[in-house]
Length: 372
Ligand SMILES: *Cc1c(COP(=O)(O)O)cnc(C)c1O
Image (cartoon, rainbow, N blue to C red):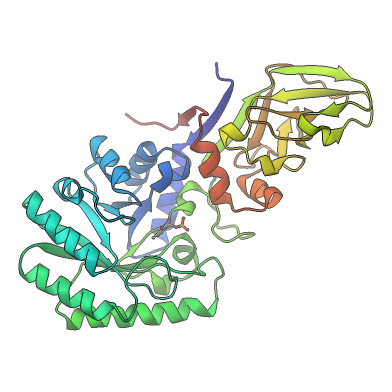
């Protein structure tokens, strides 16, 4: 018996990965950072690999090592690395590293010496996001130094890559500009003597909408979880996560009853209140106070008043509700329940944040579609 749960349908993840793969001639790296966007990094990674992903993408070295400790041997790329990490552990575990500049390259060649094996690197060029990666001005020195380190047997350049700023706005002019800058960066790397196996640029949105960005490998994240990277667009993906809880208490209260902290909601008639045991301690945004949609007893209702740390209240009128009834915050939408997109719209954020918050919280995750 569960009080609150995040339910993850691994078959949905398999289906989504297979669908994305069918839409590209490239290999697919499933992005499972941030605990698989709240879906659980290890089960998600396994499901994605079952369905044809050939590599996994994460941010941190810890995430990459956690995949290895779970016995996953597929290629893993980790790309967000502060100076001073024990990178030799990553190299020893055959984790591929994203390299954003000369300082990082130096750390990675040093790590290769300690680990006594070549570091496998993906050199990142900043083509216009202005986040990670070498600028166009820094790129020639980076590829030259990498070519030298490769000739010395210290590294192997496995990939050249970049990341898009506006892929969620298909047709945005920056996409063409970034694509051109990337192609130029790749040509420069070739002239420096590098022959990496992978060039990669596409996140979910570009995987779904811009085949000209696919190159040798695509890196979808949100789409493998069945959510649309482009608000309002439906790509036929199946959302994998459901968040729900059982009502703990119901009660009849008179008209004029203030509800939850600060009494920001007041009943306008005699009514039945239901207490749902999920709050901001579970990743429900407090910003969902008087906004978040929740399905209970066949109706979608709006949260009555403040979201507390552990609970919120629904005003159910004269509908029959009882302790133990299941309140669904979001799911696939197949049973009339709200979706992560509905929550994102209600609280002014993106579906990525909704699933990552709920799934990454203290709420236990349960899985459907597990395979031995
Ligand atoms: C998170 C991330 C992705 C995946 O992005 P989605 O929009 O979820 O598909 C791809 N590449 C990089 C570098 C990322 O940080």
